[in-house]
Length: 247
Image 1 (cartoon, rainbow, N blue to C red):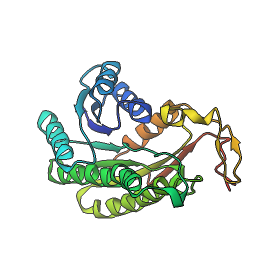
Image 2 (image 1 turned 180 degrees about the vertical axis):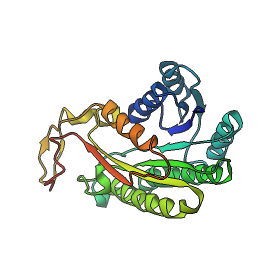
Image 3 (image 1 turned 90 degrees about the horizontal axis):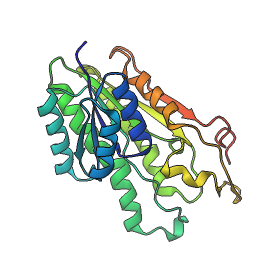
């Protein structure tokens, strides 16, 4: 079987790095995207083999186009996009959230995801054999919010709409799209969980986390299905986190 090519955004740390390493261990060639070159090269060194670091800003259409053009030029095709880049933003009450801060989260989590999905879709539609898979990183917040997270929660609900539209529009071209909704994977982004985070009733309480490698194995399973099969939505979460019954 020929090597398969996976573009992973937000690959310099956290879930993106864990997924890139899992895919590399399974024989995929990861194309690692993110804003910071240093962490990308660290991921590439850990992945070994043919992993390629391509610094890119997913909020910039020209940067996204250059990322996917380089991947296609190097390898001739793209089999997978793990659409992972995102940020939570500072927890802020609705009435105090600056428009600039709202736009920054929307630009990264939603517009960035769209731009990458659009570029991947174009390549997957044009290549021979046609097709590929897009996996969007949603969140537990695609289902239920945390306090003071209106921008993040709105974007993650919107990512679900993005996933559904891509899944429908991709059908004629063998482009599958699914979404993984992750709860409390242990990364730098969730480091505050151990110290305590605000709950729906206003309390500050610690929350359990899970290993990001458990998320990565799930993404790999989704990625390695034949294009005739698709995990449309998957939820992977720390078993005891306050999701079921949250609020």
